[in-house]
Image (tube, rainbow, N blue to C red):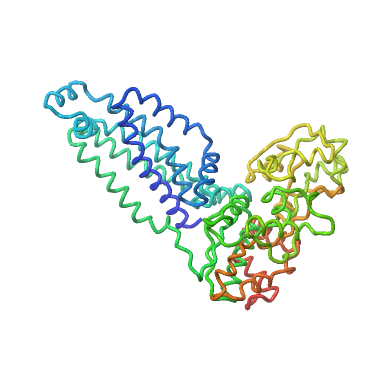
Length: 511
């Protein structure tokens, strides 16, 4: 965990707080001034609060793409409820005598609300803002799923690799931020309640402080505009993706004049969405021919024409649809695999997936949510139908909790990636896919065709440099590298650099 992640998280919280205040206060005032519109306004903000945060971010991402703006807008919508309700409630609770006196002085309704009633209601309004800000600190953890950065990436990684220290450090940082902000806002709130008459002046103090803090944190929330000398990627939510993207950075910066920028973490699906279209926010990513075919293109291995490889067909379709191209295969095959605990394997004598058929009704299958979706054909439903498996139950868990869950006995059978070093740590038995349900998932760089045109002058050898890794990384190599990162807690940069040196693509010593 670094200070930049803490400041990035704070920026997201403050940006969404400012935006929710700018939107929420007028809505609260409108709900107060127009009683007929009040139920509609309050119902809308109530409904926004009921949408699961990840679903809300996913919907926004469809229209705005990945990154911090998506996260900030999502948290803003999530934060409206306490601000709108407390604004309306605070104005309703202003002494009727004060309202009548202002009316008697000939003040117009807008003038009464803004100059008399709102300052008196501000302590209650500020309570709503305080609740919204504290809630936003926790909600901002989901920024890591859509390339928004922040402390969510630290916590997600800690859970996945079962590093309690990493989880606690990320959680402690969130708690400290929440406590400090809550204490500061609580202090201002108590001061305003004690001195209501002067609250119209004092209410500007926290506003000025928030705006000043936002300006100071602005560098941590701004993405620099890419140039004709900058290759842009997103970091992955798996060690394998991170290792490969950091290899690209090391290799490209060593052998060309380009600078490689690796933005915040993002899942494979979201990364692909950020790679396509005219408003794309990155230039390339590590992917797999099987993932490209089944998940991104929505096709089946059966769609591959006879005599043509899955890799070639996926490349052909991706080029026609999106202007994308897989570079040469890197050498490792990170296919889906079915694994069981060693205890279950020994108990039932399991060696192949077909061995599960007679005992499936005694076993519980568990995997991450994505494996149970309909996005792509290589998922749970088609898999059990293909093999004729009827498990006792199926359990969906967050991908970060999968290995912890199977080690704790929450389920007996799971889906894993063949090159994941955590398989070794968890002592899982990978069963042979004896009926060849899962296609190959050969690793390869997925690049926009216009990337090479973009850098034709500054890095005419870019494709050649990227293909230097073709066929150089075996599946065993990748298992060893992910194990080093996830289990031995070595840095991604260190592991990537050490491998490049070991195969002679970087100068230096592997020691």
